[in-house]
Length: 635
Image (tube, rainbow, N blue to C red; front, side):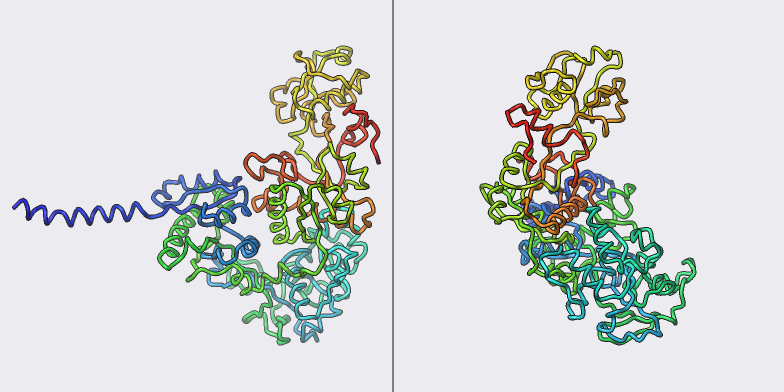
């Protein structure tokens, strides 16, 4: 009897054990997120509704690093934009897979995020792309997809628009010149260059590109003839003859959304038509004919994680649950940082898609690559292997995010010599090597800028008299050369011996970073002029004298070459600097690799500027305060 009972019991026990092991062996999928959003991801997973979802957050430095972690099997999946997919395609394309899309509720059945269209008046004689030459054009804005990048790409690929390959003008100017020569007048608002002088020069050189705008002299936002609806308005109520915009705004502008709560129509739909790529025309009340599309945001994984239908569906199911919970999370900002917007809709792909194929289906790969590879690149020289790795990562991110000209990374043991011998175009030089760079006939064009809270300031108690201030010893971090230079500046301004400056133990006059002023909120700042100011004035009253890293080029570079360098690195800073729109894509100024400090740029920097903002940050003062016999700047 016991034997029979044991015989009956064992299979059931084994079955339970097998079920338990099967459950225990289910993988925990690792969602990679940029370091700055790690806590956001962890907060979402800590939500009670996420219990049992079997996912965890893995931090990469940024999205570029996350792609590498996915390739190395240290992470499984990343929420990515089409430009990130382009970077994946150029890393190791056969390994990456787009497995899901983040769509919108209203576009949940659409294959693409949006479709670029050409709109003309029904009475227009324009019947083909070729006949757009000489027309008055309305654009959403400079650098934008449907109003700028897509038209240039498509018109160029159909050999209607000729973009010069002239190396004597910048990549941006080549495009603006082509548009200026192709269209008689336009409204193309925006900032043509992150470098203000270049922006003004380009708008002055090609004024017809701003002629149709509400405010041609400003040629920037806000303008009633700019943006998706503004481009339509420029055609309808302005002087335009063709508009480049997207389908959703056609429906809104002409009251075709079917939404009774939508604003009243601005225009009459019967007066306008779509111009199709094949030369045909369609009424705006019917199906649109788009000539280019932008793909959806999506989740990208590696081939191993989604090999086979079972693995694919398992990961998709986990993502869908995580996504759904993110939609309903209280912390909407945390969800948005992970590309989960309130109006979002999760869509699983029936099978994994190669990122190259994914982009080509929308014609979007050509949009990113529209300038071609024959145009001369900007060669950035670096020395160490880690610098080369960072330069290559920056190159991929910058090219995908439309920073032109394209960077090319050159490695050399002596970058100053590489520039002097025309083997490179630019290099980043620290303060200590400015003089050597100058002696090799190089000049600085772009500088790092510290955030205001990182600047060094001098503080003293308000009880310290004016006479006492003239002689007060200075306390600072003794092993910090940057702080010593600031102390030396104060001593020089007080007519004291500044070459033998040493840190004091007395706390009468201190040099500290501005972010430590909370400890001295009842004290006063001491400016280099010895004026006393409130501690809130640290941005304009500081003793920062250390020269920042600077981007140098040859002193015989033409004015166009110099403007191109300023333009490119201003763009890079605008995109990837501390306050850049894409700082989560590539962190320009943060630690690049553990244990590696200040790779190419300083970890503490915030942006790149074309002019130093402090009167006391200049080579003459720096060389004098170094007291090493090199007191005259070679300028």
